[in-house]
Image 1 (cartoon, rainbow, N blue to C red):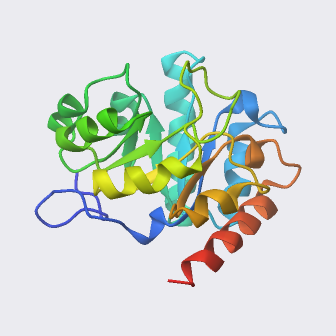
Image 2: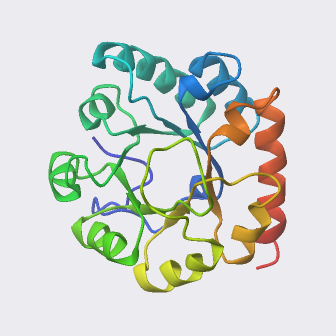
Length: 226
């Protein structure tokens, strides 16, 4: 499977324009409207160019069926679709990528199975980030930046000052995540982050489309300073 965001050699491209801006992560139990698909429609309407479907509590078949709809809608909108955890489902629905945690399939194994796929990895320290990079990750997620209740983790918040440290040492694309809201997003932007993964600030919003647009406008102001 060739991915349009990869180089002709099949190696991960440094960045695509889709990786700049807000990166909505959708989990149905965190959706105010009770529907991951309805929320997806809204975030796409708001201009999201990359979306992660993150479902851990449903049976595999239901996740697959949801992923088919996510794939259809993101493709129609010209947005990237990343599937959390489930490489087999990501491959089955022709998603653009998979996002792996520290206890999921090793990156090297995922890269062997999907040489042209975007592979993201959740990392909580420099050691994990470098290991992901050296194993073939396309990008790493750095977090949690702030305290969060949407993901069970024993890791203490890294704080926004960790961002330039990761950026300097890992030398591959990165996203940031964990407790990021409209009120503190500027703190991560000031430290150099440009792809901001957000969960409940969007999914629990009464108007997800408007929230995505607002966050992207804030990010664009910082990008235009460069």
